[in-house]
Image (cartoon, rainbow, N blue to C red; front, side):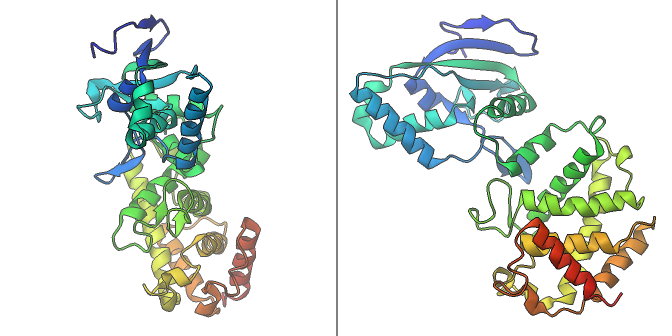
Length: 355
């Protein structure tokens, strides 16, 4: 860390960590920093940085080279880096994580790898950098979110996850608690090798660009309805949910989820065969959302106990008289690809139920 402290101004603010302002050569950013990329490690979500946008990198590379041709090398905006407490998660050969500015640094790395002659001309130029020292990951995440409120919006699915990591369930409103439970459930479902959605939920970006069945955003929006209904029926008490008992709540939500989809799979088994799953819409946003709407409606509004609710879910699904081919991709329900469309499907399910 001695190198970081050279030519450094310490910033005096009300924080539990040190803030330092300095400048560093391009070569330091290329060789000594790394983004704390959002990823799974040992079944846990770590990091917070978005995926690299390579088109954006190419634009920055073009800017650097075109500016150079006019006699300029100009990057006045400050990059933000961090040194975690006890260097937690930081590779031994790196000095800092990148909190803001990863695309600029990635552009310099691209030049280093693809145009070494030009890189040798710019590697000693310096860029301003603010370094947060001795910070925890939650502080990094909060800083990342705050910075991105005024620049490129954080992807909706990624924002949900980051918000979950910051959650203080003693203070959160019930709406936030519902989202917390839905995101926790999504992680479990995505990790379950026996799940239809094993590695099929996109936790950043869209389902299509990640070749998945669902985005986290679609999963959470659909699951909210069921969790909210379970709360209304008195099966779960969201007011009692806090950081110390989340596992019990998540396990209960998981039981309802697994029971629901076991019944749906039993009702339309052909739609869930491995060779058919990508040729149907039942496990994608259309089927997932509309079936959750249907279940929430059929549970009714009168208080019931858990076992009665589970039985009601299965009987509601079994009572639907529509054939499996309504879920074929390109079939009758495929045209309903919006929230209003999901509601239309749910209405048709109700109308074609024998209950």
